Length: 115
Length: 115
Image (cartoon, rainbow over all chains, first blue to last red):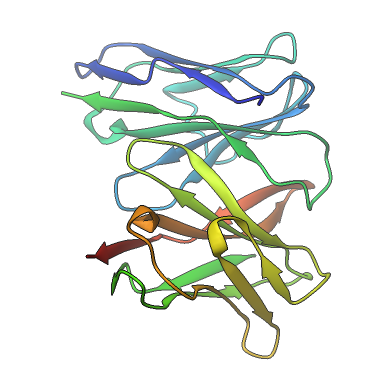
């Protein structure tokens, strides 16, 4: 069964360092999402891609976060510099078509701890 | 704007007892509603979805939910809890922003199943 892949699964870094997360969506899924989930809360959307284009990045802290999906397949989310408040689970999800009723498929996430 | 409210951040039931997790939504457009489950340090898995067809929706693992427009509710139920149901459950609604679509999640309800 096809799955969304994410790496690394866990990342520990020090404040002010740079970190990067990778996501490979299910093959053929045009829409890709990055979410941030703070402990004890629901996921919040950071950025949405349709193929290689950013559709929504209104909640992405652009002074330190960046995201790209250069070939419209896999994607990278970067934080530079990391801050203590960035400690969270970063989830990637994908969706096959731009239809509302198609649910999103989530990867296992990357747990980031900033010391 | 669309939003969901999950009543009760923690619910505890005995094995074999009824599970009831509450979700109320707010949406300016006909809602598409979802329930996801998350096990520790894992991504989200879809349990079921409502997309304006039948108001009683059956999902995986014996869960079901009923859409009640008059009450703006989409509560999740399971007749008999199993130990393996212990997890965190998230209700979500389709959200629209700037022409793009996303999922807006509630804060989650952690379900504990006691032997």
